[in-house]
Figure 1: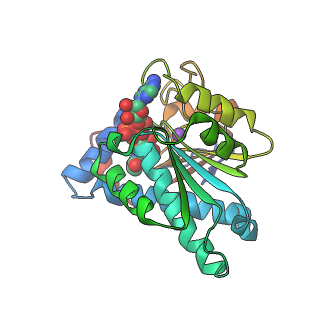
Figure 2: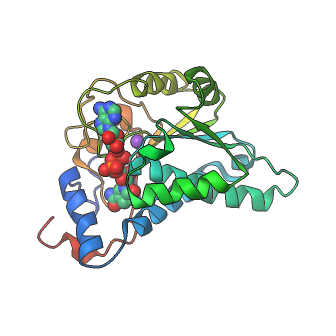
Length: 247
Ligand SMILES: NC(=O)C1=CN([C@@H]2O[C@H](COP(=O)(O)OP(=O)(O)OC[C@H]3O[C@@H](n4cnc5c(N)ncnc54)[C@H](O)[C@@H]3O)[C@@H](O)[C@H]2O)[C@H](O)CC1
Ligand SMILES: [K+]
């Protein structure tokens, strides 16, 4: 669903707070045994489907770069790249190296959740995907990869953003924004650096062409069209019953 404006809010897509979203996710896992790995898989596949739908055959040639933080926002983005790799390789048999890369702005040991560790393990075994890792690649290489991208997945921060943005995240956000106009910037869940509830820019934030968010929009996404761009909301199979007592 595309939210053209704040008024086109259909039943079941009314916005919620990030706290309510975490409660719903935790209900999904604790009451309905819907592991977060399943939620992440569905989120990542919705991102891939959106890009395939948006770019059609051009997706085969585009350089797509996922810029990942160490939280589950980065995890969603890694899932998306895996789905895109399968789609592109199936159509590009001649090419064994496709134009997909994953940049992780941390060291692999920094991944904490089962779901993001698992998705890094999968990605790190896929020869079709170029990987740049902050603690082994220098910032210039990472910035160069970002500058060459036709499509950037902003997977740096989602609802877990807190306080001042530390380096090198702040610089990377700037580098991504410098590409606006020549690169399609898709924010995963929340434009990184935006407060998910107030929509305020904490100190620096991604200025996205579009934001794809999961389950329901968070309040802040309806308050900052400048950074959010086109808002797409995708359900990811979390049982509706998880909202009982929360929404
Ligand atoms: N809503 C759903 O159903 C699902 C949401 N998913 C995705 O999960 C993220 C939230 O994941 P979480 O790990 O809680 O937070 P982030 O990915 O945003 O991680 C933040 C990460 O960054 C560090 N950090 C926070 N503030 C700063 C800062 N100011 N400077 C530097 N570093 C910072 C912090 O330590 C964390 O590690 C949500 O947005 C969705 O994208 C699920 O994957 C699928 C279901
Ligand atoms: K993001």
